[in-house]
Image (cartoon, rainbow, N blue to C red; front, side):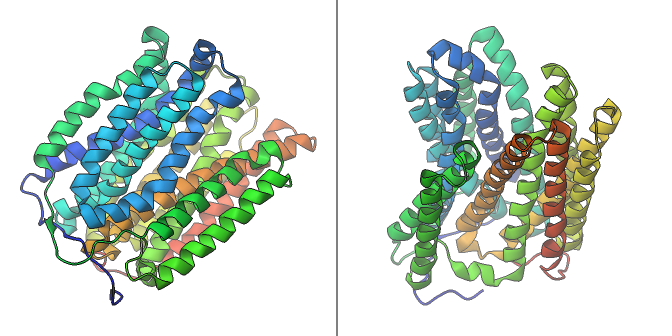
Amino acid sequence: MEEGEGSLRGVTAAPPARRPWWVFSAIGAGAFMSAFGGSAVNATLPVIQSSLGSGIATVQWVLTVFLLAVSALLLSFGRLGDILGHRTIYLWGFVGFIAGSTLCAISPSAGALIASRVAQGIGAAMLFANSPAILTGSFRAEDRGRVLGLLSMMTYIGLTAGPSLGGWIAANLGWRAVFYVNVPVGLAALLIAWRVLPRESAQGGEKRFDLMGAGAFTVGLLALLLFLNQGYSRGWDSAPILLLLVASVALLTLFVAVERRDRAPMLDLGLFRSRIFSAAAASAMLNYLAIFICLFLMPFLLIRGMRMSVSEAGLLLTCQPLAMAITAPLSGAVADRVGSRGPSTLGMAILATGLFLLASLDAASSRWEIGAGLAVVGLGTGIFISPNSSALMGAAPKHRQGIAGGVLATARNLGMALGVGLSGAILTTLLARGADLHSAIRAGFLVAGAVALAGVPISASRGGEGSRDAG
C-alpha cells in the first residue's frame, strides 16, 4: 500500500521476538486484566451503590465512563504507538491501569470512583490499541491467526470471569478488593512485559502527532457514544440527545476532512483502500453489534422472562464465551493455512443462525435449548474473530500496525456501544407500546440475526486470499 508524500513512519518494527511466547504471556495478561477489570465491576454495582450511598443513575457511570474512555482513545494511542513505539505505550498502559485500579480501590465517593475509572480506561486503551501490533511483530506471519485467536480467548476469559469472580470477591472481601486484585497481577505482568517485549528502533524524520484530528475524533466519538448510551432513557427526540447527534456528525466529518489533508494523519485513510482491511473492519463492527444485542437481552430473558435465579442464568450465559474461547485459537490456525475469507464468512453465518435460534425461544424452552443457542452464537463468534483480526492486521503495513490495532479495537467498542444502545431502544420502545417481554426480546434477537446476516456478504467481499493475508 502506497503512503502519502508526507507519511511518517516514526519507528521501525522489531524482527520476530526470540521468545515470542513470553511476549504472548505479557500481552495475554494485559488482555485478561483489562477485560476482567472492565467486566468485574458489573456484579459489584449494587454493593458499590450501597457502600457509597449514591443513586442508581450515578453509579451506572462507573461502567459507562470506562467504555467511553477506552473507545475514544484507541486510535490516538495506536497512532502514538506507531510514533513512539508500541512497547513504550503498552508499558505505560500497564502503569496507568494499575494506578487507576489503585485510585478506584481507595475512592471515598462515587464521583472519585468515576474519575478513577477514567484513569483505568485510559490505561486499558493503551493496552488494547498496541497489543495486536506487538503480537503481529513478534510472531511469524504464518502463526498470526493462531496467536490473535489466543489473544481473543484471553479477552473472553477475562470478560467471562469478571462478573462471577468479581461478585465472589466483592461478597467475601468487599468491593474495593475487586480493584486491588489488579495491582499484584498488573505489576507481575508489567515486569514480564518490560523484560520480554521487543524494542523497536527509532527512525529519522518528523514524528508529529495529529492533535486536531485526534481531538475531533475523540470528542466526536464521545458525543456519538453518549447519544447511543443515553438516547433510550432520555428520549431520542429530546434536545440534549439531538444536540449530541449533531455534534458527533459535525466533529467526525471534520475528522475525515482533517485526515485527508494532513501530511501526517492520526488515521491513514489509505488503509481503507485495501478491500481486506475495510471489509474486516466493517464486519468486525457488525459482529460485535450483533453479539452485544444478545448479551444485553439474554439476562432479561432468563431472569425476568423465565424466572431463573441469577446464579443459574450466569451458568447458562457461560455457554457462549466458553464455545468462543475453544474455537477462536483453532479457527485462527486454520486461517493461517487457508486465508481469512472462508472462516470469517462462515463464522458470521453461524452467528446469524445462533441468533435466529435464540429468537425462537419462549417461556417453555428448555435449558438445553437455551444453552445450545448460546453455544452456536459462541461457535460463530469464535470462528469469525481470529481470522478477521489476522486479516485486518495483515493488510496494514508494518509501520501502521498500531493504528490498525486501534481501528480493530475501535470497531469492537463501537459495535458494543451500538449493540447496547440498539437493544435498549428496542426493548424499552416495544414494552412502552404494550408488547410483552418475550415479544420485545424476540424482536431484538431478530434484529441481531439480521445484522449478523448482513455481515456475511461484507465479510465475503474482502476477496480471495492465499494461505496468508496481505502484509
